[in-house]
Image (cartoon, rainbow over all chains, first blue to last red; front, side):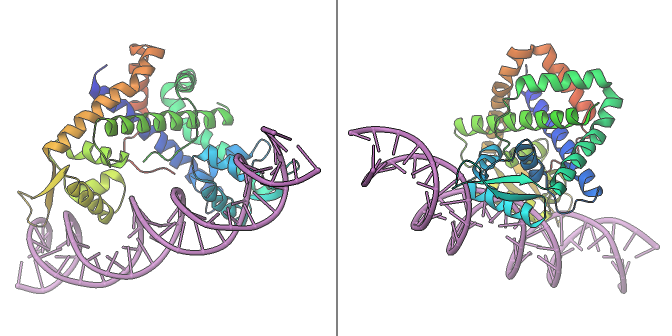
Length: 148
Length: 148
DNA sequence: CATCATGGTCAAGCAGCTTGACCGGTTCGT
DNA sequence: ACGAACCGGTCAAGCTGCTTGACCATGATG
């Protein structure tokens, strides 16, 4: 594979990812959730199943625990999450979604579905699914880090 | 397509893009170009053909012209680009790559090829090419904006 | 030639992150 | 059981890369 093709692939990947991300974010905002940033979405993804500690979140987002804690502060202020005492460790605090946080998460999923809609129309549902499969086989799925 | 699949696709896309980007950056640094960030790569991509003005660059990167100008300052300081008088507009300055800038660009292409290598081994060259084609048909290829 | 648009710069400020120091609770070795 | 090291969380200070706002000089337009 030629070098320039590799660059083109990277650019296409970034453009696609950026496009989807900003569309989803716009969709969430349009559904009435103000002041949410894409980073919050990634936090929600980690918090949704059973909650998580700030340190867990930090590892997941690829930032320091202080940064994660600040992000949690912000989400608390906006009413999307709350801190509860951790059932098994008195040092830790379990961060869980509030009802509003769950609503926002659902909104994000709807917005995501809307955002991929044009792709489905262009490539067909099967192709999109294949695309997704390929990507998931490739991407190590580590911490989500801001890449530039 | 289910909502949760759309989210999974987005996550996979972001993970893949982030993975590639950071690998390329690491590869460039490993080739001896210090202090380069992924953002510089996007600037190089715009500057490479015939140079560009700071305002062009700003539009391409999705930032203000002041931010673009600061980025150019940084690249000048590091010796990768230089500002020349614009041949057709006395207000403007044409930013062009120096020899070192060209070397860095070539290094980035090599690093990109290396970064994609595991994908090729996993999916085969044809599949990767198809993947790339799909993405390019989808992504509007607008300004490259930091997405979160 | 008056007016407005455009490329660029200077200056100030801010958001989101980092590093460093620290406290209280937990875990482990002996 | 007890001291040492470890770990989750917070406070505080600082930095980087960006933004907004004001401004100047040149170019385009009626």
